[in-house]
Length: 123
Image (cartoon, rainbow, N blue to C red; front, side, top):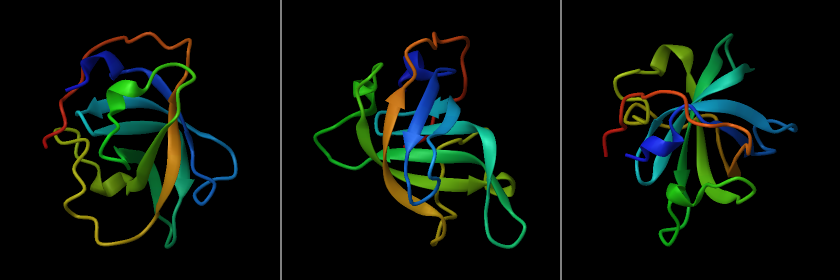
């Protein structure tokens, strides 16, 4: 688990999902994915909203440990509807069969020190 990233603020640049950067706080992390609680929910089809997203590294030669202030990491971004989010397994996407997803960059917001601990993502 990348515990140094828990409770850090992150920006996600995925124009297919939002024209503006998506901001959130890391609530779970593993070596290849992070779960974010979004600062503002994103509306989905059918009156659903996504309050969370999971970002997984896109290239096998990269790791989310490379997320440092100002360094963008290319990721697969999957929006997680509020009803699908599991706080005990924040990076779990086993339910996902299609829907709101995109490729985008994840970058750590410089002024966000870690605050506390959160559950690890299961690999």
